[in-house]
Length: 304
Image (tube, rainbow, N blue to C red; front, side, top):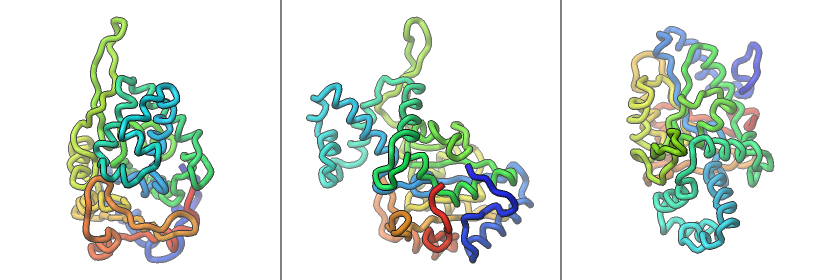
């Protein structure tokens, strides 16, 4: 989290985007406290997702450890494609199949052990291009916005396509969002008895759909029970969530992060991970009147 004094958004450059955010922060004070709800995507919105998602980096790290213990795992077709970094083979196999294969690495593991491994990876393993721990890949301007909302009585939630437990492992420390404030793709658990004591262990099956697109809106209602008045995202997988937030009565704000800064991060078009679209999400955002944030022009500093 960030520290600031009189200026709530010190890393946001002067201009129309910053003015819009400040105007919303002022207008939102007219909302009832229970209506002050903000939801944020995670990958590419709160922290960097290139050249690979941090969760995928974690899975590949764990795959390497597993193969070092049991070399025969490298013969499994999904793992072989990942180890070779064969993007074509991974694409042909399909993300759902590869994702379930990676989930197998943690089948039978307790929630606490998974959390500890994920937390250790984020804080100790280094980002492949930035050179510092993944935990330092958060976006400073977005941390400032989270803080500004929090000081104005907002409840901030993370609504991510990533694994719920993976993000929960670090959400409090990185974003000030408690674990129960994370809504993501859910893995199933099995209730078991170990040495006479009740326990939970992970399975390799999803509970519900991957948390992208319309699933984000459904899961906001099912898990949070409160409709947001602010939604921030960066990809086509966030479209419905942003549309849902800005369709409310009274002050509302839809934010889309445009990754257009090739010097300080990566310039690219953000797409959904589990479905295809035909229109660039930045063009969608501009057409619908969302606040499209230029990382290049609107942020004076990118990383925290």
